[in-house]
Image 1 (cartoon, rainbow, N blue to C red):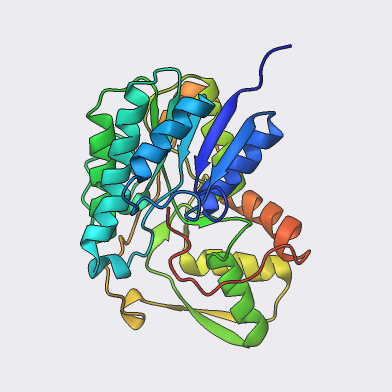
Image 2 (spheres, rainbow, N blue to C red):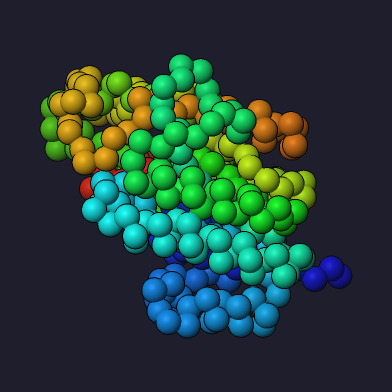
Length: 306
């Protein structure tokens, strides 16, 4: 009988993407170890040494980096903290797996690496041009990892996450719709809504294909925040009017790209598969979790980030 493949997931208790990835790996028969901030605080003096020792002891086949600074607006006032978690930490992880070629590093990045000036989906060949500190820190993390030239490293950009385990845009909207007859939602930002369980399954396909380098994985199609909110409310049959407003009506400290739809052809070429259309994925999420009481709403406004 073949030994179980082993994975170590950083952020596997609370992170949207990391939690889903840990769950999908377990369902696929992997032996999964999860580390939260209480287990490994990267700000601690010996954090990297502790992780090195864990890797030596566990010898995982896969290291998933779900640890990140995700507070987009707060990053404007805390650039050093964002840079540390989004650049320095993944760089250190890359160096760790460089000396452990049998261990693949899966690192998540974001659509916020782009400027939003295009009006067609962004490919992995498009130049980055982040508008905010958070996006710049994610680009720096990508570049640091890719510059190592690793054949055991996957950088997966994704976007607009929703899924079980913690609050996200969808749960926030549904909570507001239950309490109000109408809500205002931004209609001049367009992106790729992505179900975390789909992201996890697609990421596992890349791992199994022994892929390396940069990939886009996101829900197929595109939507504005307003369209995503309207579809979520419709599926739950909430009588709440979704009123479109502009980004100027909701001023934020950090600028957001007006258009950040991701082209996933890089993923399709390697795996032969295609991510699901976001409306289909949203329906599955709504019926599986939010209508069964399995998800608790959270007002965290940046929970859509990676």
